Image (cartoon, rainbow, N blue to C red; front, side, top):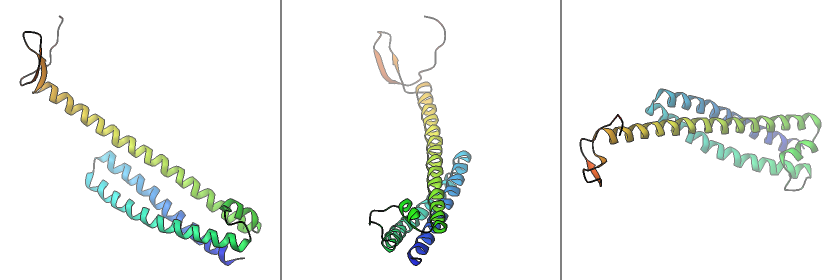
Amino acid sequence: MGDGIDTLGACLAVKRELLEELVMLLDREREMIVRLNAAGLEEERANKADIIARLEGAKTDCKKALADAVQEAGLPCDATLSHLAAAVEPRRGATLSAARARIVELIDTLNRSNRRNRDLLYGSLRMVNRSLEFYNKSLGCADTYCGSGRMVSRVSGGRLLSGEI
């Protein structure tokens, strides 16, 4: 019962390495966002797409290796990695459990990093949009009231007013 478990362990190691690489890439992406480096951000996006494609391949390999190891261990075909780890000898089970725990930890880290990067980007875009809206309203074609009290659209030369009514 060694071959299937060894293959599964190797597949999980590849998946772990790719996830670790993706975590580092998201950290670099965050640096590019903070530095407003659009070219660097695009390069990191391309690298991220490559790693994600490789992760898809690793995911397929892991599923096949898990199915083979589960069959080899005589477990039902819907058994999970946790079930397999509990069914094999303790040393190998501990190795599989540790690999699973590390992958779950990395996925959690990836989710947090993605949320952080998303919030940075959306916050920056909101600030830019608000600034543009402010300048559009104050430096030109703004909606304003005419002498008769009607709203007139797109009158050039509108300006900010201060004082009391």
